[in-house]
Image 1 (tube, helix red, strand yellow):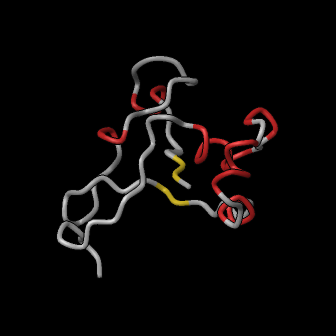
Image 2: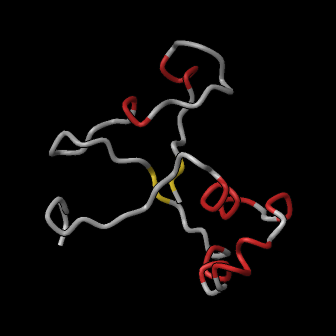
Length: 87
């Protein structure tokens, strides 16, 4: 699960509640923006469920980072072997 860790106030613009975008992250040695990664152990239970069971869940009852992962509509996960930076 991604955790940006910094707020706009840390950069001196906006309020402390305003999260920075991925473009505001500090770059790694290769210049790519690398967010802080934190464990989200409860996600494993949801990944074991069938698509039908997941669909029938009340999203208001999903807690923590699992809710962010499963309910954020803008989030998309994919794997591209040709575009992969790390093997």
